[in-house]
Image (tube, rainbow, N blue to C red; front, side, top):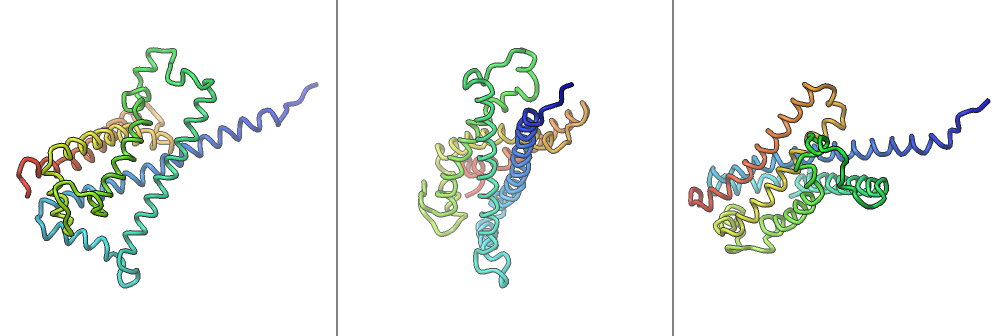
Length: 241
């Protein structure tokens, strides 16, 4: 008579649970970042209300929570939560990627046996670009903060006014082109990431639900991408200035 050896199934079970947990971390942190992008997009669209409204909005972000929080305290809380989410997202993605490479012997991780699988939703162009799209997004965020937040770099001219700083930058064609490339990368990342997040959280329960998730993923990606691109092109074309 033989009995099951728990030491053989135990590590596999723990590894599976760990993988599910890492995917859940990516899903939750990804959704936090989507909410931030929607809020940030709303703030960017204030550009169409004029200099005063845009600068007042930027100032309001720094006075949130007063007098219970110091000047800029609320904004720093948002930054810390966002940075923690980005860090956890990248860490979980790196661990999952490393496991995938080990599982495929470090080679051919991008090869798939079935042509049909390559045509599936999970093997869409966006899924292939998730890794490099993430790198592009990270580089863009660093540049974006140095340009429009800290005023460290200032194509078009430095200014203490967020409105003027934004307009000065987007009047330059190559700034708008680089911004467009980054936003397209973000859109592709969002399209796949949004779908994957809800699938990981258990919403992918039927063909109809998968189709709905796919549609919502496309809508969210398009809304955020277009919403972020409208202000720079409005400035570049002279509609705002």
